[in-house]
Length: 114
Image (cartoon, rainbow, N blue to C red; front, side):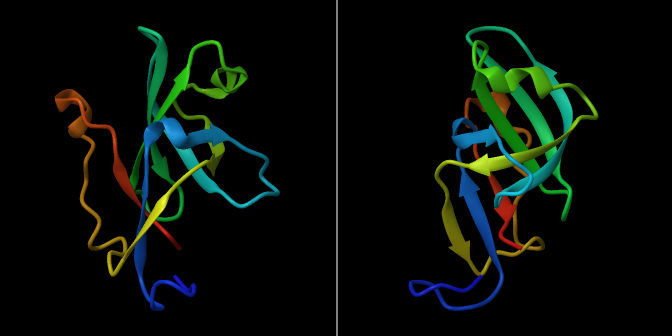
C-alpha cells in the first residue's frame, strides 16, 4: 500500500458489507467468488472469498437492488468498494478470519489491499 497518509507496505482493508456493490470489471475493485447466499429479511447476505488471497468477504445488499441478480454460489463477481478504511501493517497473514462474526451480529471482514 502506498499513499501520502500511510507508509508503504502490507495492508488490509476494512470494508462494511453494505459498502460493496457489483462493479464494472474495467474499474478498480475486488474479484470474489460467492460461497453462500442468504435471501431472507430485507437484505441479501452473501459470503464470498477474495480471488487474490482467499480472504473472507461479507456482502449485504437490499433485495430490490439490481445487483442481487448475480449472487449465486460459485458466481465470480467484481465488487466496487463504496467506502473503505486501510489498515496498515496487516497483510493476508495478519488478517483475522471474521467469518463467524455474522452469527454475533457483526459484519466486517479485513481484505487484502494487494
